[in-house]
Image (tube, rainbow, N blue to C red; front, side, top):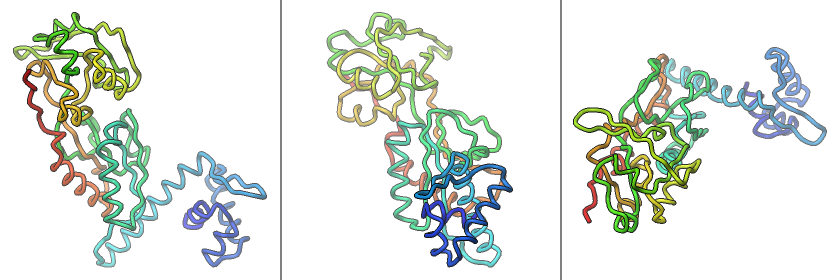
Length: 300
């Protein structure tokens, strides 16, 4: 695995051999033996270059994680204080990750120079064990018993529009009035696909009739900001626009209960230092971020 990692980093058997202080023939035999045992091609070689196959890319991620855990186990057995190191794989929803997780990751990397991070920004629920994920940021209730989640905040499912649109067309006072308004709907998030509300403790469902449908949440937010009409989003997605009065939340008294935000990791194994340190880092940063609190409705 160590030889394989170096070959991948150098993309050259000769350069890897020089770095490992081994002969090129020994490096070639090591990779060939590994591929024979796995029964798959990890590296595609030509006379000019070396490239990773799809299987090789997945195996590289696993190799870095496994060797990092071995180093931590050896340090722990020797009584040494474990310092975060190795590759950390993190996943989060795409827009949420871009806005809030990437700044955390950048600061974490500056704090811990021996850690590398592989970030998966995906609008789907990943299987942490099968996909080799160390930490997952989840929005909504947890359903996997093997995940240990620490709640770090809440977000709301909100209806919003620009103040200009609301001043021209009026502010809806009940969800049933949404049919009287122009609506833009995003199909990107399952959390927003059904427009559910609560009234007197009972669920209230409204099926919007949009003239504009988009495939990405930022596009729906942009259309609402331009005064097109109402849209339904998650509160963190418009936190900056609420603070600058570019958008205004309506029907907040009919909102469903907020969705929890969890920082998750696998609880069925020893927690590496890189994972525990990153989780602590996330908890600290989320607690300082007002985007995960409640917004007061803007008065006209």
